[in-house]
Image (cartoon, rainbow, N blue to C red; front, top):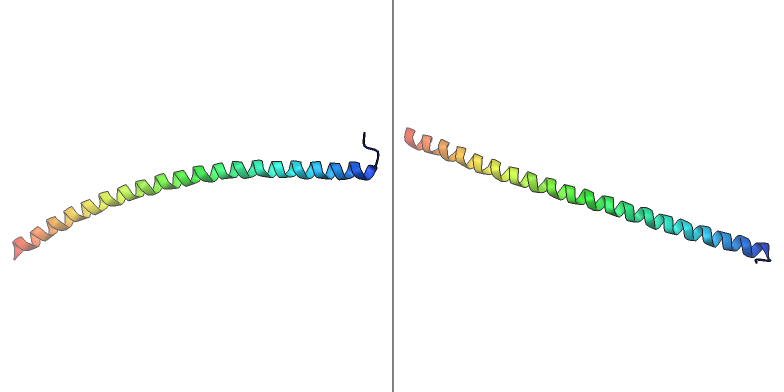
Length: 75
């Protein structure tokens, strides 16, 4: 089929390069999916932290109100 050895080597190099590109794209897709999952998990964690901060702020406000009422009673 292929008569010239240079043509065979060139075709082998081209096919090898194409295979490397396809493999690299596959790895990139896998990494992108992994990063997307990490991003979703980070978003969930920040939402939990925000909810906890709101609870803490409400509790802190209750405590400040209680302490404020005690100071007013002492005067």
